[in-house]
Length: 411
Ligand code: PLP
Image (cartoon, rainbow, N blue to C red; front, side, top):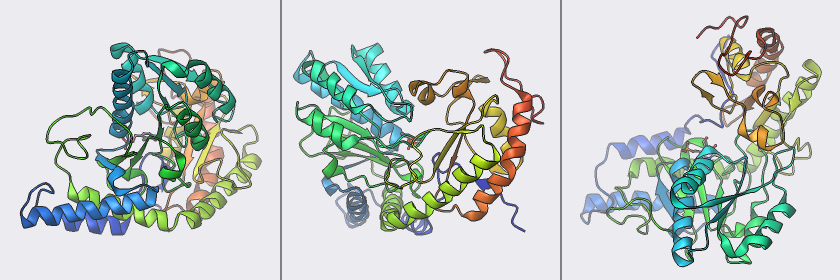
């Protein structure tokens, strides 16, 4: 009998692809700085170049547009700070950053830092109840404020509720005014089509560990005509945008993972949608009061990430349910942070118009390349009991305490 835990948190990080692991470990045994002129350096540089080409092909970009970074967070920081500073240098009035409240903290906190430290002003684009950008409202904001907008940022797909955003439409609209758009495609890349060139985005963030590559490497795709102010200075690597010795082994693992994931993308899309819909149908029967958040996308038109399931389970603390599920051998996520022991509402659900209490009663299950029917059946077996136990524990009585009584879990 297979008693290993059921891993349903692939949006947080996913298993490394075997071929990517082999490429990574092989390169880790070899020496050579890709910037060195001797044979060992040139060999390492060829490894980086090959990976750059693999990632570019998977993302619909030119190899010279791939700027290696340490991951999605750094890519978002470089794009948003870099675009803001370069646009403001060209026009001191260009201080507005257009963004939506559903962005990942790598984007939100960077924009808020620029507001606190660098005189940026934030203009919020609304999203609907499914967590999808209100495109008409966003384009109206661009019409009204275009002379002062430094950049627009819109994630390709949301990491909590899986909603896919109209990135190409918004990028094209912004480009009509010469305004660059950054997109955080960390969750979308190799999951739904993300063609960088066709999207008209100026910059796009991706991360290896979300797609079967190693942790510690990502990339920012930067269109060749886009000017970015670097955030990190040194040896002038990566078009002078990101100084620091390149890690050939991590790049090799990232390149192989990107190529492998892109090759099976369509099949994986259908396979994961089928597993996802099996859960949606069964949960509707087993727990009728559960509310699926984000677009249901039963026609598989790409409005929702194929492996994403996100629910509100009423009158139960998301953290309590997570702990009970964990005890029952299921790894899930609330998607939002628990700050100093106090459960926090999901900022994504709040941006979607839910009240703070509802926004704390959420659970995210994300499927990935190792997920199968067994995982889904185990979840469906455990969920009603886990929900019952977590609901018995109730919601945290006030903002200063979390009570896990009745869950069987102490902390
Ligand atoms: N952006 C999104 C949408 C994410 O989901 C994540 C990670 O969860 C990040 C950015 C950060 O990526 P990384 O973990 O590679 O820094």
